[in-house]
Image (cartoon, rainbow, N blue to C red; front, top):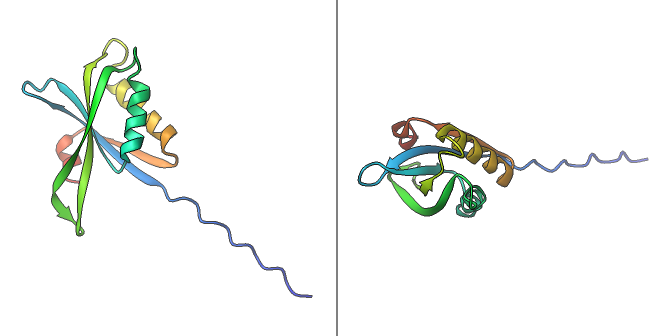
Length: 126
């Protein structure tokens, strides 16, 4: 009697890495901006649509794309920037906003690892 073959287990979906940082932009450094690398445009849109509901972390947001000027490994990296208009600091402090964004990214893009870089210069030089 022939031996039954072992079934090949499907490989699990590889984890994706999402890193983000906070930057203040604008003429007077008054525009709060979240900058992401490793996330998809649609995922970031869904995250901030959920968090910027009428009484959420901000009144609204605008999203745009930046390109890194340094090419590494033959690739040019792109960053997704989200500017918050009128952040609601009464609802959540800046550290709470970071936790909410991280938690929502886990919910939208499972499985993923999310890391916050507090130092923007370190984030740029990844």
